[in-house]
Amino acid sequence: MSNTMKTWSSILVLAACAGLAGCVSTRSISNSDYREPGTASHTSPAGPSDPAFAYRGELSEFDILGVARDQTAFEEDIQQALDKARPIRLKPHSTILLIQSGAMFPDGPMVAELTKHFTVVPFSGRPPARDSIGSLESRDSTGFSRSLRLAAARAGAETILCYWGILESAQEKMATKAVSWVPLVTWFVPDEREHVRIRLKLALVDVRTGDWSVLSPTPLDCTESSVGLRRAVAVHKVVERLKSQAYGASVEEFMRVYSAEGMSANHPRPNATQPSEGQSFLR
Image (cartoon, rainbow, N blue to C red; front, side, top):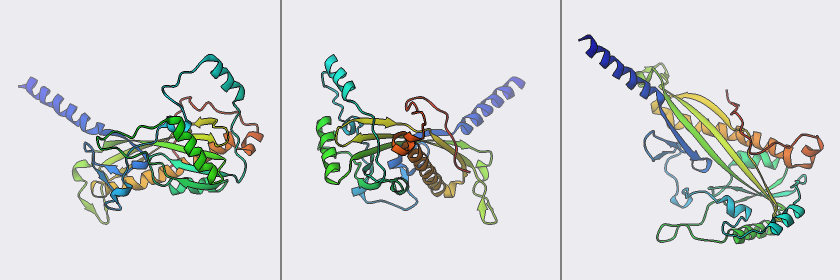
């Protein structure tokens, strides 16, 4: 009898641990609506959106930078590219064509941060529509990049800035899960803790030369408790605050690395690809 009780106790402990583990999800900053765990559906605090603006994927980094996957490269081509390459420098108050991958418009906080230093021309970051058989329209990467540079030139922009972002989130079940519905005066007992991390990548393209550079700022993260009845709204607010903080920090790093003012301060250029620990800017 005692062995049976021990077995059942072990099963209950394992089940409890599984419940506490929660679930992990990854999504684009351009498709950041809350998802119920275990589903692919989105919950937007603002209600249903116009299908014409529906998310349909990300721009290819190859297209923005003009990198042809099937191009044959010779050693002399590589040497010539190295000889001609020049570091990208941003002029104060110059014009930038700004693209957020996957979005019709760049997020407002990113536009606001960049407007402090430049004239910003927002541009669509939605990829081409899918054809009748469901595959993306094929296109030449170098041709698309040149067309984008021509569009920027016609807008008077000397630089193209395209950025991508990923939100990584995990839900941790809390001990109060079973009583989340019980009202206590004007609030509810939190039953879940949301862990959210954002990673950004910024690609800078010189319109005149096609030279480019990529920067990946330090990831930011935060933790927030939420309750079932209000989870979609709570998570939406956390994500928007985190995105705003990340945009501010990325523009600060962006200016330090690429602006003439930042370089004159004798700051060493960081390795954009080196791993770094996430930081929390939210309280």
